[in-house]
Length: 90
Image (cartoon, rainbow, N blue to C red; front, top):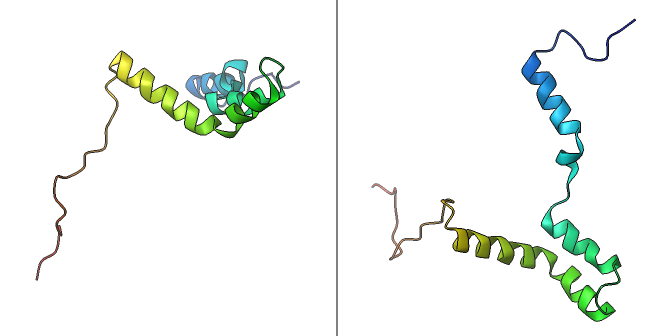
């Protein structure tokens, strides 16, 4: 009779596999929740449609606001002040 877990795998591999199979790993993202908001009955149909249509944009704005308010050290895009050719040698 085979055991429930394969004993040939390392312990860390088993932990990762259990974590990926848990319900916590299956939580939908904010954009998915806002997309599915259309099927609820909280607001009128027009408002639910707008929220669902702009779900990705709203989730990006939400996380940018959270980043600014909390002051999280996230990597930012650095844009140069002037446009010039770089890495060109003749």
